Length: 120
Image (tube, rainbow, N blue to C red; front, side, top):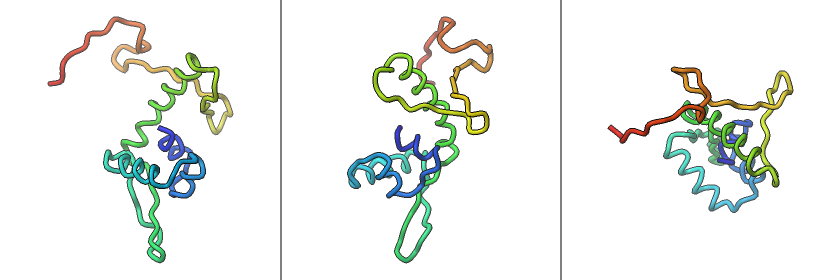
């Protein structure tokens, strides 16, 4: 999730992710590979000499942003004792306070009874 957070913040290069996250290169390589295989990031060559790749968000990766917002809001509410990433609107400067709603009813998710159906 932290890689996805950083990708949404505009990071694309391996070294930038490594510096931001402070993790071992072998671990980062594995995680970037997994996110690429799952279709959240796309690996693109930006230099042939020496060979260098960058990692850019796919449509699925861009669609993950509301998930990050929701997890962040949960963390601020229930795990506020530590450092929690905060998100701000770049134009207004206000902190984003996400609300997850059901598109069909407009009701906030979690305020109405649900029924769970098995996969089809």
